[in-house]
Length: 398
Image 1 (cartoon, one colour):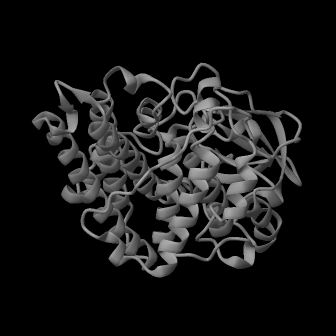
Image 2 (tube, one colour):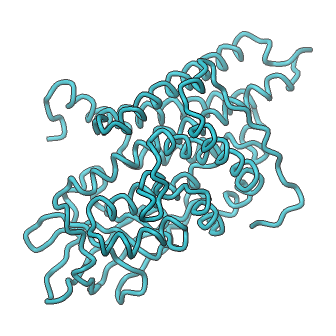
Image 3 (cartoon, one colour):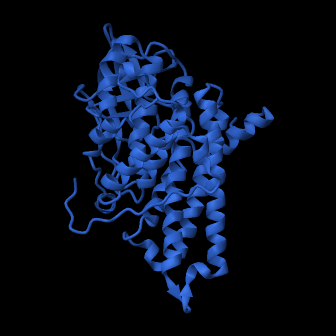
């Protein structure tokens, strides 16, 4: 934990203009409030310092495990929480209210590492990896994006060849959250027939390295790196047996995008709350700026978009828990949430004037973070085309 003599006090109050709390169970509210309390105590007072230094707060990994934020929908048998998807969404909302990088750490661990091992792995793999990942003893990462293949993962070049009791993996991945500190990586690569398969690669395997990505202006408190495979020998028992083709990684991305849809609303809520509080305290022309029409317009539009996104996410959470949500519905929620959150951070920054760019407030950090969140797990434009293909039946990607 960072040592500082000037700890910030988190006075956040959550907006709930349409009494959405009435749609939540007591368990939902208990889970949300426990994560909110954690963020107020353990994230908000320190996260700005880590972001300024571009340093990942490694100590939070164990804390997030203890809090149950890793794989909350995975069955308790494997160390997960056995919770529904609204619980998962609320957790991600509260974590991203603190910082997008913190939520990214949890999203990757749960949706992109634990989910594929649970869904596509065998019993031995589940028993070996999931409890350690759930507790935060191990951190994991997800290798899909490559230097020349982002939105088109089917063009990936990373591949492996059969070598008897093991395979030999070659290639590289980039923009990988958690990579520099991960013990395991779920990696997607093509076999000799060109079919995409998932492999569990462990730190310490010869030829496997995870160089850190430096110079980021966004997600500065999150660890990002590359995955480099130079003739890495991976035991065949580390291949995920129950999936082949792009449906494997795309199924993971659907789960991650769902968490993002909730998470970005948390960032928007934080910026709205900051701007509202500031508008009542900042006096110009003899009165609080919140009394001026243009400032009220900004606040009213922020709250409207937050409320719409909250309702969209709640309904999507119900459909996810019932197993009825479609990937296209998740895409819509992810894109919408990112878009409204990014706009809200910009409007909130304007309301704070010059103070909005300083580390005294969270707004500029959220704004920079969201520029990454708009891009990863499917860009804004890609999600528009996913929705477009779903409603027309026509594929604009080819």
